[in-house]
Length: 134
Image 1 (cartoon, rainbow, N blue to C red):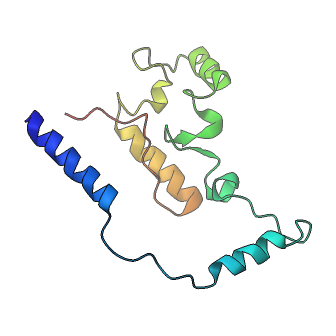
Image 2 (cartoon, rainbow, N blue to C red; image 1 turned 90 degrees about the vertical axis):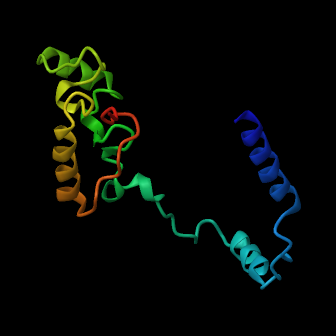
């Protein structure tokens, strides 16, 4: 099995080094456009917020944990303290019990509904607060 993985790794490395044999794309004048943009006066260039910086785009939502940012007991010490004071705490996973998708996967459905009600979109799945796979 080890030889198989080694062979596959070497083969993938060979493809990276050799490439696919296609010629590089021709210059279509995009560089000239980029230079013109670079020369533009920064005072005249409109400021555009990155997508994750505006509330409409999800900055109110803690993406790693799947709960509202201000209430995230895994990121905010203040929120964690408030949840502990209410007795809403999962000692096993060190987060609010009402936010522990690991102990109670049905809580994720509530979070999905909350996200969809606010944004009209599906909630991105959290990376760090997922139920354990059986």
